Image (tube, rainbow, N blue to C red; front, side, top):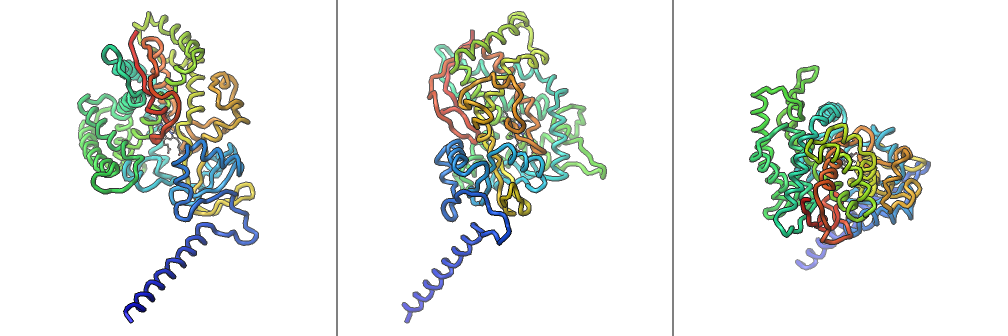
Amino acid sequence: MAISVVCLHIFILLAIFFLSFLWYLKNQFPKPPRNRPAIPPGSQGLPFLGETLKLYSQSPSVFFGSRHERYGEIFKSHIHGSPCVMLGSPEAVKFALVTEAHLFKQIYPRSKEQLIGPWAVFFRDGEFHSRVRKLVQGSVSLEVIRRMVPAVESLAVAALESCCGDSPPAAVNTFHAMKKFTFEVAIILIFGQLDSVLTEKLREIYFTIDGGYNSFPINFPGTPFRRAFLARRRLGKILGEIISETREKRLAQKNLLSSLLNYCDEEEQVLSDDQITDNVVGVLFASQGTTASALAWVIKYIHDYPLLREAVEREQQAIYEANDGGRRPLTWDQTRNMPYTYKVVLETLRMATVLSYTYRVAVEDVEYKGMLIPKGWRVMPLFRIIHHNQDFFPESEKFDPSRFEAAQRPNTFLPFGSGIHACPGNEVAKLEILVLIHQLVTKFRYEVVGPADGVEYSPFPVPTGGLVAKFTKN
Ligand code: HEM
């Protein structure tokens, strides 16, 4: 009797499980009703898991490249637990990010919001987004960053000197050294001058958060995510103290923190401490790893291609000599007049594509070229696929700065995204890269001693091992 009751329970449980599974499949792979446009072609992989494991086991170039070749400019998949439509053409990306941007909203996993803070500008849409975005844009305007050249220059020299160490030179992880440099530039953007002990403390805590950003998001003692989560709390507390002190001093400064603190809308609403803190952490995150990744790549390319190196050296040496053998500092005008090096920077941003793709979510059923993007599905503009498309960039795997002598076709060069969420910090990033290259090729020598090929994701792409190299000062 007892056995048959147990069997009945097991049978009911299995039936419930089976029916839920059918229900799940029906919802994951909805059939469009008659007269409704078809969902784009593609595969959604395994039930529940989708294609996420495949994405992580292959590189984004292979994963997206093979599907783009097979299905065309727009195709479906299933990533991070959500059905999605990948957009691999300039027109489709423009559609989602610019012309019909109102049909797509920002979406990020909750774990990322927990580590950065839900009020960060790139998590938001609408009124709040446009207000804070204006404040960020104001703090990185050309007017502001032109005054930053001397500070960026001394931080670049310090970063490169710290790579040299003792003699004989030790092998260093170039990406880590560049992260320190870009962190310090971000600190200046956000706070103006900040005490060096406090900067170091913030750096240590921030790097613990950064270390958990790409980890599996389980908030369990001992996991990297947990460490990052606790570090974010500590960082929030310290930033809260800096905010209170700065508020009391009422200093008339032009940096991001003071813009956030002084903000007041028509209804006399100010930003809360949480909103300010989340945006400080947000800008640290958006600016630091991205620019360090681009720097690691440009240093690698200059190393790998001797002709490129010669041309960059020639241009930079002329500036160095004009500055009395580097005794006078670089000027803003000089940083705006490095035509060859600038093209090297653009080609690096194309080749490396620091942000391979981004995400949005469809707020309603959207039709694109006779295909349906169902409400609630994610769309993923694939910047990397466009940057490596032979139709827009012939011999796309060749590093060729001369391709930037001509203007690019609209919406084919998108290292900083496009539309209302496009990167407001692109000029700062380019300034950091140009200034560091100037110092590197005029005052230092280096040799890559680690793996020469391969890419790692941190989450941004970096040369394998972070580009292990030995640096010496001339
Ligand atoms: C090479 C370096 C960089 C690259 C490749 C890069 C790339 C990007 C891209 C592609 C986006 C758009 C993302 C999307 O549409 O979802 C973006 C947004 C953003 N970036 Fe950058 N970025 C870089 C450096 C910086 C720097 C130095 C700052 C410093 C202010 C910064 C601040 C931001 C912010 C605040 C956003 C969000 C804007 C918004 O949502 O309105 N980025 N970045």
